[in-house]
Length: 92
Image 1: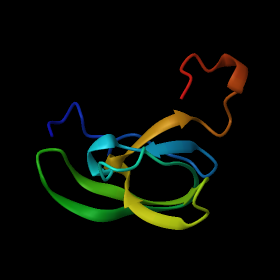
Image 2: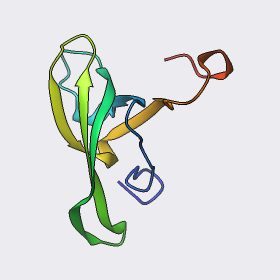
Image 3: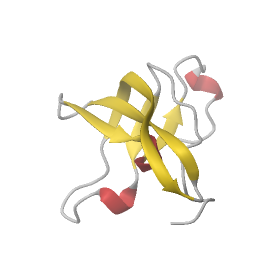
Image 4: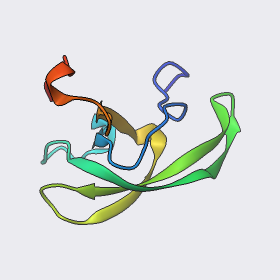
């Protein structure tokens, strides 16, 4: 993973809709989508050229109903919480 693929600099907000990045998903299931429930800023300290700190994101997976905590770099934003869905050009 290089700096262009690293999502740790992406700023998530509570209520955002996200999905997990495909390379952390087992081959026998699709990527899960969920809602950001909480954020712990600068939770992970990275010792690399990608950045110094990364947020921990608590996601409630929609279909599974469970909350999981993940580093921000393994999540992809589908829609911002305050964005009008009609203006969203990407359809997940």
